[in-house]
Length: 165
Image 1 (cartoon, helix red, strand yellow):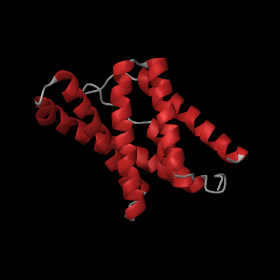
Image 2 (cartoon, rainbow, N blue to C red; image 1 turned 180 degrees about the vertical axis):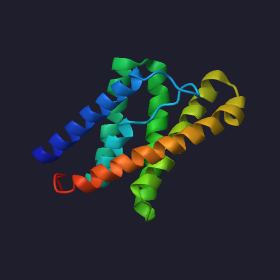
Image 3 (tube, rainbow, N blue to C red; image 1 turned 30 degrees about the vertical axis):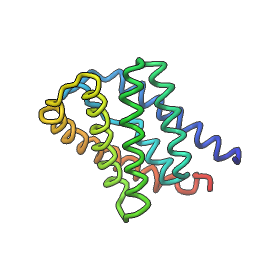
């Protein structure tokens, strides 16, 4: 791996971790557990500018390190399932369809919430999570996905020359 690519991935991982820390300092909004998804700015950027394998690597490292630093084993499970499901769906959308960063980010946010509610169901054995909690998360995930997609799209366009190939 070229030094410039490794540097780019390291910077994106650090940025995603900083975004995770900033997000952890924001008081929990309604519905409980809703987050803005700020680290996904870096993940979507890596997906579009560097590559799929690299996006998975940055996402995995970010999830593990931020869970160790700011969370718990349970938060690792929620983040790992939500984050990897989200990224997998974003990869498929990007690869097989002509969707924009915003569309890819919105669907990624929705599947992140679906993954986390599935983990919550297995932890609590409460099926009502799908009926009452998931719809609220899907609305907030759509709004957050739009914002994250817009910011990531701007970064992808503006930093095109800076990105290693």
